[in-house]
Image 1 (tube, rainbow, N blue to C red):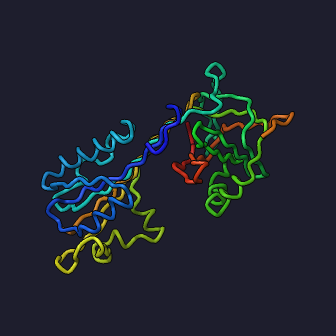
Image 2: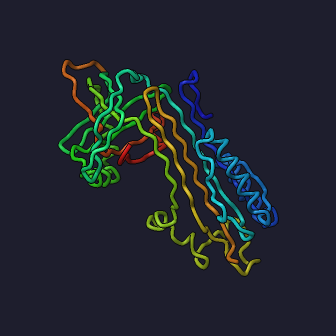
Image 3: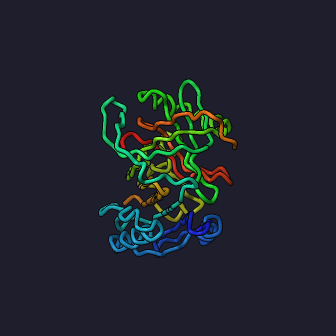
Length: 301
């Protein structure tokens, strides 16, 4: 683990490379991945691709405390696979101010389409870093060990997309810098989310589309392209995530695999109410470094 504070916070980050044992990757490239990413190297025989897939899934499950068990689905690898790169992260943190389970009550959560869903809400009155304006409320819930969950709650359940746009255009930094200690009456849903997605289209929109092209991909820094008639390219980038938020704290895990193929403060008197009973954004942030470990949107607990 990168950090472990009296068992109250556990954070681990791991990388691994699974290069084909019969493919001539430059040794300097493999060494640089070991040094820069502290990556584990697992030479693999992709003629036995299902066996390799099982080993990768077992490694990922081990790194994420069994929260992500089947990162790679059957059929995703084949004898033309040349490398799989896997990144796994695991976080488990306890709130500095735990919620009392006796105060957890059922209530209505308003989804983006206006329908209501009965969910369990945690309740607490405490001093928290807080910010508000006419569009949203922001609350920071601290964990032991210098981490926090920041929640970005639109005042209108239908305005999540607008808040998300502002978040990406500098709002995150602006809002978090404006947080001030405030007495807050918190009403927040318990929730568990699991998601699996292919990131090819998202990465292409971000300008990385060429890596998925059998013709245009250029990974010449990894091997001698002149020796091969066919090109090395990325066939898929798969991301899977898990997060559970409850009274004592939060557990979260995520894993991403890229598969490369050859073709072939003081408490004020009055408390403000923060009722997360509608869709919101959230991030898990390391308050020491400022790094964001997880980010997501809660549309329906």
